[in-house]
Image 1 (tube, rainbow, N blue to C red):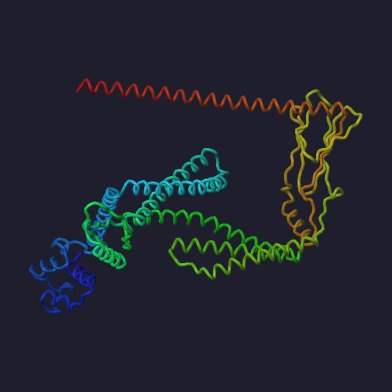
Image 2 (tube, rainbow, N blue to C red):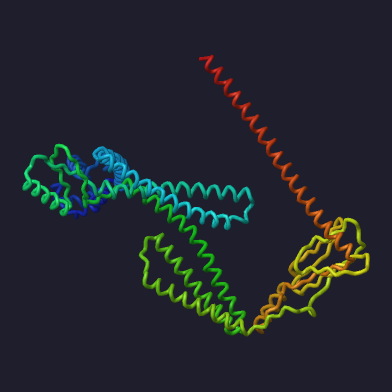
Length: 505
């Protein structure tokens, strides 16, 4: 960077005009103007005077960028300040503890232990809640991936708890003892009047924010000192922790952003049910209140991240208003639901799927539900009838003498079903859209035999699954044993290399 540019930066950083700088250097304003424009250069004695006056060396002034030099000096100064402050903190703590009585030391230690236990309990409660939240979020991921993500989140939380806990405990210790306690020594052998005078002087100095030290022969007294000094060491840790907390808050705010968008989508979709009257109004009000609450939460999180002051009165009014709207909305929904017709019996609309087969010794029905009904007949055949609504599909399969019923949604008519459901709800009718019934026609003995076969197959399946689990664990054990042998072999090779190296030396 040019000397002219550096001179201009130095003058502006020190809030000097060209005339003021010229006066300090003993030159004319025109000379300074020419230096800054690059039309001329100052003489060497003026360069040395500038370096001395503003604490720079010639190389920095002539060849380097003064802004970068200042930033570098500032960073080094801050680092040195942090280190000095840390050692000052340790020194003050050591001096204070060495001058405290045993009773006072025990009291201090007990306070720190109680504070530590308190924070452990708080962090444990927050951790258990966070564990449930994280497990719910990553529950859909594969086991290996979710296990790694969970362990990473757990490690980050533990480290964060340690940093936050230790920082807060140090800060409490600082303001409870280091900042508010000083040693005052008193003379013995003084008369009462002088003691009273000393006492008044001490009280006066304390009220004025001054530290008082009086010579003393034996007794040491710990008193409160109203001076409160900042610690860059603790403030630096607090700022780092606060930054990490803000990053975590920003990540968690994404959840509320998605929920806000989802509620807005639901609010738009609610107009599909506008004909339901009171139910639509109640649902619309409830969704609107949910959007307001979500917005308040997002605003609080945003203000915390950017260090912006929240408008508490406005937020409180909005929150209370949204709660009132939610109450009105839910009440209106219940009023509207009283006008709906709930239809469960739709037998005329049910479709049928029929399967019939001869009874065998191993035949069973792999299905258990309250909708299952056995009907005794005199026939040796087994007949399974499934009745289901138009909104689902049913299929009966017989695999290895096991009758299985598979239900699934009617994907072929999903758009038609949605339109039909919306139409029926607008007509204030709610049907049992997933209604189905299963009937099994067989003789009494065959029904009993089918139940026995079903229980036996379930047990065989459980035993097979257990054996598969045992085989899998045995394979893992074998793999681990091979891994241990390989590591032992590597250790032996390393030991041989070490022995060879020692013998060579």
